[in-house]
Image 1: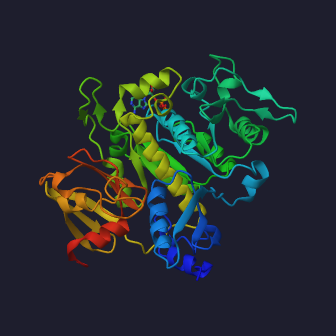
Image 2: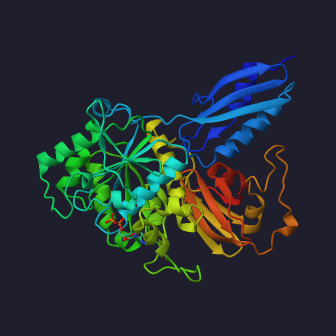
Image 3: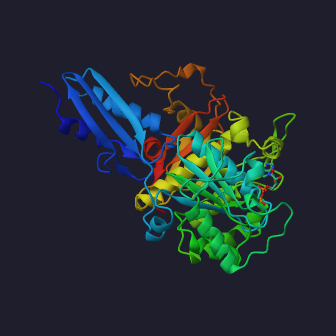
Length: 456
Ligand code: ADP
């Protein structure tokens, strides 16, 4: 007897969206189920094309559906539909733009424009429709960073058609103000500029409009943000900036505006030597991660201080476009995935407040990783056991679910050389044996721990 639609939905409800903490059937992600004798097909529609665990989710769905009696073929179509921020103000100004994400910093020179440009390109490469608005009225640098050669054009509908660079639609004050002319913007002029940039530009349909804000947290930033309907803000800081609480000023500004903070990016975090590739912590690092854990502000990732980032930006082709496989570009791509996840959480009504999240991750010794969770549980892992529990596609066969990793090839003293959070749902380990593709969801880590102490 052929399998029924209810049976498929029932097994698929075992799969949880890691960001939202709910199952994919309850979230309405499973669509277009078709059954033809022993063949089953369906779509899983995620909330962002930039989901880093979409392959894991597809594999899980495949195995669950294949295990149903009478099913011999399973075809899964992974799609994405970015959800939009609900806002009447936004619908009046820019109805086709789903999410507006300002990138802010407590002061200038921390790499806010560099981060904005690389994030925009990374999101576009991951499959999203992206715009980049340069609202840095003091020093509009986006056209140079993005190597824009052409000015915006006037469309037949009277709207401004933005140039497209590396898949991203860009608009900047620099297009409208003669070079070298000092721009002193006051309240009403600024408001007019924002209205023009938003309403008069033919953005078309956009999943994410990234806004490069002027540095600092004065009245100009406030009035810009009040005018723009925001999904949530990204704060860029350097390690020393965090130590001096400069970044916190920007966080406080958005709290005043009732705008969620989507996350913190630590830029210029550790220096990567262009000769030997060694990393040196000139200003210290990890401050943003610790700050995030202490204050519940999501940590989106660290970008190293690297000569190649500056050189490619100066050349008008940001590193995510010119050297996408470089370590620096990969760091930006990770931040972009984490940002997209945070936008999904915001637009889907927030994360489940009861789900376990680590408060502290440490390595008490080379052979141990310790996590203290928000519910007081303490998990101690043997580093080798953790390495062997990796579920990435090179360690576990995607089709059969069988382990591919030959345990005897993993050194006895294997240990993490880097531990980085992925959004608010997983941890990425880079291992001393060179393995770097493992993402461990919090649920997976909770199911693995041994020697647990609950409560304190
Ligand atoms: P902001 O927008 O905060 O004023 P910019 O993005 O213009 O800062 O960056 C200031 C300078 O620092 C630029 O020359 C840029 O190329 C450089 N820069 C930014 N981030 C990095 C990085 N991670 N590594 C190396 N240079 C960087």
